[in-house]
Each structure stands twice: as C-alpha cells, then as structure tokens.
Length: 165
Image (cartoon, helix red, strand yellow):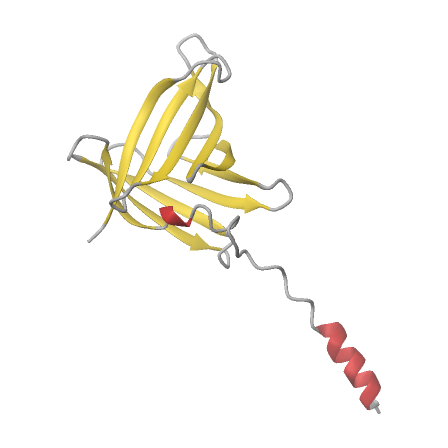
C-alpha cells in the first residue's frame, strides 16, 4: 500500500520541470520577418519568389521556406542561442551543402554573416545579410559579399519582402 507521502513524492518526481520559454526581446528580435511574403528585387516590380516565414518549435525558431519563381527552393532555420547571446541561421538550398550564418540585431536590423561559396579564384566568400523592417511594413534583405574576410564589401543581392494580401 502506498502512503500519501510516498504518492506525493512519486507524483513530483514524475513531473519534469518546465523548460525555459523562448520569450523576450532577444528571442523576438527577428519576429518582424515572420509572415507570408511576395519577394521582389529592390527597385523592380517583377516578383522573384514567395517566402513563408513562421515561428516553429514552440516559438524557439524561425523557419523560412523559400520558393523562387526560377531556380531551386530552400529552407532556413534561425534561432537565438542564450549561451552565445547571438542568432544563428542554417540555410539549406536546392543543391548539396549548407551554410551557417551568425550575428544578431544591430540598430534595429538583423545582421547575419557566414561563408557561402567561393569566388572565381577559389577564395571563400563571406556574405553579410542585413534584414530591415521598412516603414511600409516590408522587409529588405540586403546582401553583401567579401573575398577578403570582411575588409571590403560588394553588393550581392537586394530583396524586398512585401506581405501577401
């Protein structure tokens, strides 16, 4: 026969503690990108793709599903890591391989950098992506590339995400 005290101990041992929640400014710094988007090259009205950005994993990650008009689709997972106090993104496109980006919020924008591909001479290319919430509610994703490890930068891509109606 189980006593009341033993039953209480057993019930407490069987209930694990609640894990910490992914809430607060650090975890929500990239929430401005969440939504359903039509994507355009900046300054052009011809659509280059669709993108679905959603909170997943109990709100601890942001998943992008990229669906270009031409080319291969891809997916990214972005998350805030409290151990490093930074944001990390894993990109997997429609070709073999993956890219890791690291960074975080700077002056209201999300800035992520990582090595993505090589230039014509075989030098690794450092890519810096800056995501900015624009006044009209769109999001700009501006990419720059460097083959000298960030000493100098060249424009690489410039996209505008407009919310779907």
